Length: 411
Image 1: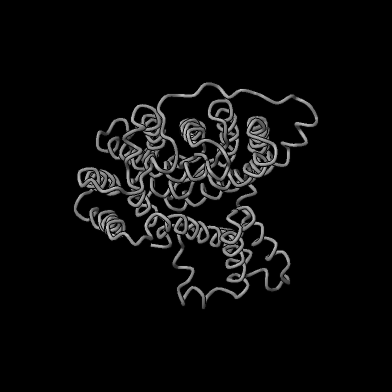
Image 2 (image 1 turned 60 degrees about the vertical axis):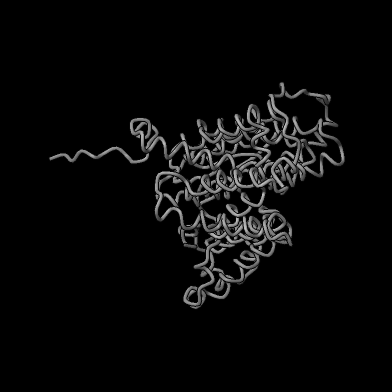
């Protein structure tokens, strides 16, 4: 007797057939788009480009990866790790070199995916993976402190109210994402109260409309190649590392598989498209991915497609509305994301007692290196080097591939 297996759950086609699931995915996309705005704008400052450039590039990246990516529900946009490696080149040589650097990085990522090298990510040790997750949680939280740490009692009150709404509302309201409720209610309150608070519009110009194609302004010669290749390699490998590690985390969080080779090649194509129309590269963003997967319960490509379309609408037609959202409300949402991202189980006495000393040391080195430099690639590299320099008898305990180091463990 043959057993007929049911189709896998949470497919896009199943979502389209269910109004309730479709509503859930679309609302997840809405809050994801809102969560993208402040970080993308702040990252544009790091990269030395206009905020509109990063926002449009994020639309292109998120939209492209909704179709090309190998990990459904994972959010890709102009990320801080990529901005960190683009910034020095822009400061030294100018913005015109971003496009060729991004195009070259995209080609490298496509080759990486097609060659099957993405499978090497399965050999990342558990201790390094845990350090990566914890460092991300710390960096996300630190980035929010300037937006809520204030002597103004209203800002602190709004921060606390945001936390309460996001944490407590889901106990009674299941169909509407709590972060979206917090944003709408508290933005409306500040508008009608007449209080002047820091808003999204204060982070950068929110002009409507769409830009044209990015102009290629540098000559195609060896001098240009000598300028762009170090930056292109950094963009390619930092973006791949963050995207593939984030994909692995989402795999664990949703208990579903992803195609790492497709993710790598898709990211390369998306970065080329973003370079041509937008101007800057990106990769997966774990904070916004957690917003989509954990807070919005997004599970399919429809959630990221909705996020891209909502972000496009906000950047163009509704830019004046988006500009009025208080930064403290978004900071409150991202603070909870940071808390959910951190692997709290790794610090529990029982876990520390069971873990070997070297495993804990590697995890801490990864965290310290990442937080002190703000560079995820350096942090992961620091953890791997520490592990490689340890004696073989100590290395065995820490050299366990990452199977369970996910944000879900922190809950």
